[in-house]
Length: 191
View 1: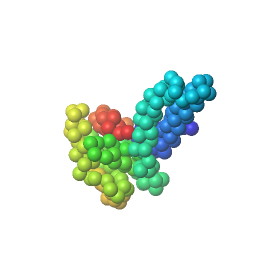
View 2: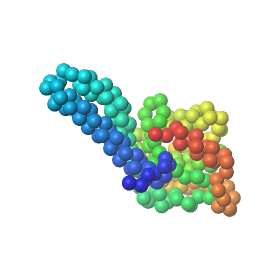
View 3: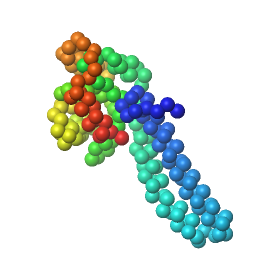
View 4: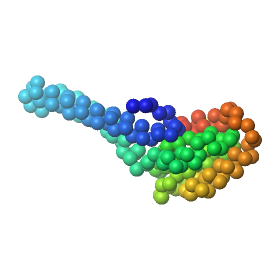
């Protein structure tokens, strides 16, 4: 299985598979420890049962990590094709789930400039105000001042990205230091 970095197209699908494998493996280990105790001692009243019970805590943590990912889906290919390498002066990320105080918000595409972050989501229940305020606050804690916008319409998102891109110059150079700092901080906020 190919490994994907956070923000790469295909990351969410990869993360779901890895989380599922880890969760199932952890529960199989618990079951194996419990059954071994019964086989060795002839009853469930033994130290292996205690070990299996204690192992449920980390296994539950892995299960929660997996179940948080389930409602979110990967970036559709048409969204990726619509945005990949099309916007000069912007850095684009895909398949990100942003954590906050209330509920995680999944995005299909995020474009980062030195002063603005725009994101696209197709989730119907995405809280625009919560997303924008939580991302802005998180970045401010890292000493970064940016504006944040969340779009639920792909056409509006790509229009805004094209507009920002047209004002950033004609060269396709590497992203600026500030854009990379914004990206790094933003990825730290994501699951």
